[in-house]
Image (cartoon, rainbow, N blue to C red; front, top):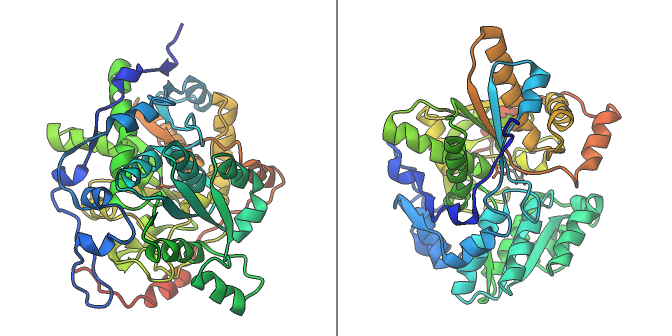
Amino acid sequence: MKIRKITLNENEIPEKWYNIVADMPNKPLPPLNPATREPIGPEALAPLFPMELIMQEVSAEKWVEIPDQVRDIYAMWRPTPLYRAYGLEKALDTPAKIYYKYEGVSPSGSHKPNTAVAQAYYNKQEGVKRITTETGAGQWGSALSFACNLFGIECEVYMVKISYEQKPYRKVMMNTWGAKVFASPSTNTEAGRKILAEHPGSTGSLGIAISEAIERAATRDDTKYSLGSVLNHVKLHQTIIGQEALKQMEKAGDLPDIVIAPFGGGSNFAGLAFPFLRLNFEEGKNIRCIASEPTSCPKLTRGVFRYDFGDTVGMTPLLPMYTLGHNFVPAPIHAGGLRYHGAGVIVSQLLKDKLIEACSHDNLEVFEAGVLFAKAEGIIPAPEATHGIATAIHEAKKCKEEGVSKTILFNLCGHGNFDMKAYEDYFAGKIVRHEVTEEEIKKSLAELETPEIG
Ligand SMILES: *Cc1c(COP(=O)(O)O)cnc(C)c1O
């Protein structure tokens, strides 16, 4: 019998997170205060995040101990399986060996609980009673609801109104774990009330939802805010994925030539790729790590590297990142988790230094890849995850054309069981090719008043 599934025991869950900053030749540039353009210190973030997470955000320590209680909770679903994709290899008739790490076995169905649990833990340690956040597609909101419940922390989720109405099951999931979910714009906040007064019919946006969640946290002593992507500490927590995958690849007697993950703000990409990049830094290996983004939101492949706000409204510090401009509004593609205008700071610096690569796929191509994968391997991927699959298929086809066998590893970062609307639209022919025009990108970038990076 061929070994399809490479598993680890619970006691093989890594004991530390890997902080790639320690190994980066060029360290990330500091965040800037938008008013003074001076670097901000950790204390500026104290109203929003617990101190331990702020320290992780600016840390250059190579290894960060995972608290026992967090590891205990990880064991509810970790170590996650790593699969050899024999079915997909056969369907593609490729000489390439394809593996995937499957994060869809977590309670909320994606990689997001890896950081949600860690963040809830540090908030609990510092006596926080309530955590607020925003959610678009619902993946992050459900992960944080699950995590907060385990620590007896109240969770308040601002869900973009249009998703709130179109994705009722994600909302019910959050309610099941005890979270309060509000359609944003809501009447709970100054920001929400202002929008509603001006636009009573507003269907909301991620930018508005972020403003509401931040306002709640900033104006209450017992309340903090939480983000599910982009930030350094989020990427740090996700490195549990790649460290497990590395052990599993060793167990399979293989090492990937190419590591691939879908890219929204960079957390699942960082999670899988950084522990393999460590081998490039430490042992001179030459593993290619490729971030895969949609052509309708191409910040890595067509954006610019400069300082920009992390949110639409301009409430965050200025961050040095690949961006399309914080006013960029991507097409409403089903891969909601990939519709973010910028890339996390660490990943941006790595791309600038050519230590990682990026590519993009259009909406139709990724659904073709997702359905092919579901038929060959059984699991129905989240729309976000189909981007990584499309890149893996592209590389596997190249192997066939060139007659070489390479080992490919990709991150299947979530299942798509709550995304049947997306698949229904695909089968009904409603998914169309979409690519941003040069004019749209130029226009959005022209609105930036933030400093260029020389
Ligand atoms: C949130 C999400 C993403 C995008 O976020 P990253 O931080 O780039 O990982 C991708 N896939 C799934 C399934 C998600 O839930």
